[in-house]
Length: 96
Image (cartoon, rainbow, N blue to C red; front, side):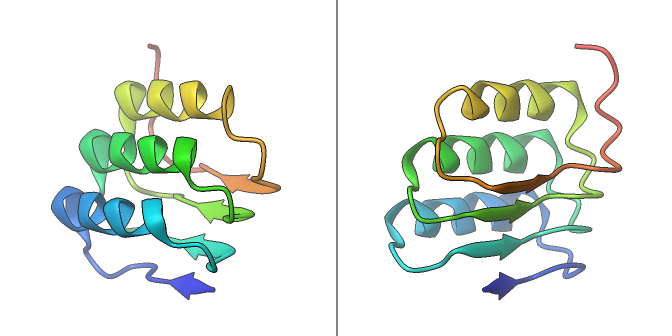
């Protein structure tokens, strides 16, 4: 479990974490809620989740992902088959 909730990670930090998680083969739960990762960080996370096959729980609540980030996550969900819990609440996704 990796819980980095409410740490002001931002888009740059989220992108760096996504790069690490692309190659991580042991972590099963990742919580990055309340970090203002925005659409850019969210898109990086979505790309990672297309590749990562070990994460089972992913929470990105309260990160202002916006419509662009929400679209990236939706596209990821078409590919990812390992996530069991996916939390995106409170993200102002609005219309796409």
